[in-house]
Amino acid sequence: EQIAGKYGPAARRRPRAPGADEDARRQMRVLVQGAKDGDESRAKRNLTGADLSGMDVRDLDLSGAMLEGANLDRADLMGANLQGAVLTRASLEQTALFGADLRDANLGDTTLYRTDLGEADLRGATFMKSHLRHVDFGRAKLEGASFLEATFDEALFTLAEAPKLTFYKVDLRRCHFA
Image 1 (cartoon, one colour):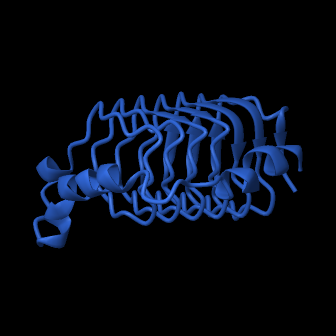
Image 2 (image 1 turned 90 degrees about the vertical axis):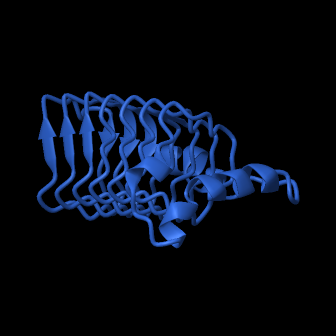
């Protein structure tokens, strides 16, 4: 409850300045326009090392995107499609991913701090050697997800759907399951 009240729903209600992120959102849409044009090439979705911090890219289709080493701190990706995206070594501090589609995403060696993954679809996602601190997985779909040698410090799994969830070499003592 402490995590959900502090890091979950609060992140979903953060105020937005009208039009503050519109230019950045427009630029982001140009980067992924290939999908809308029928070009599914990953080259058009290469956002390796991109600084997307603080951007509002809700509901954007970033499926299959290469976001390796990207800075997504304080970004709003609620409802975004990140299915199959590569987010290795990315930073997701105070990132809103509520209801996002992260099926089969690679989040290896990723830093997640005060990250809201409530109601996200994380089926088949991989968190190898990831650092998860104050992360909210409330009501997330975690079937087939893997946490391999991941480091946890306060994580909330309230009502998460987690059949066939894999934990390998992790310490879950500071995690909350209900």
